[in-house]
Length: 77
Image 1 (cartoon, rainbow, N blue to C red):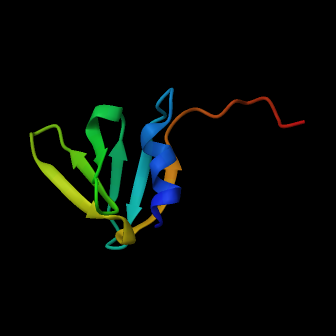
Image 2 (image 1 turned 30 degrees about the vertical axis):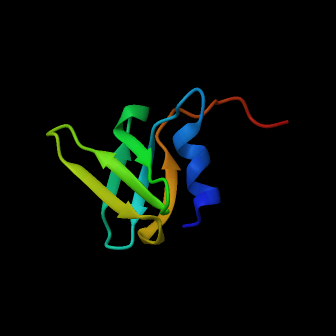
């Protein structure tokens, strides 16, 4: 995944929870903005897990992102 696709999900205001699907088949849920950070000089997602672990995921291994929020039931006009 390119940084231009990843950054808006992380810096969105208000933040919307999302899931990142990885090339190894894992699904990482990001439910709060303090759970993630972007690397300064690399395209990577830093995920801070509840147990205190930090996981660095190279953006090249993120195959897709999906919103975890509720969709507005009002159809688009």
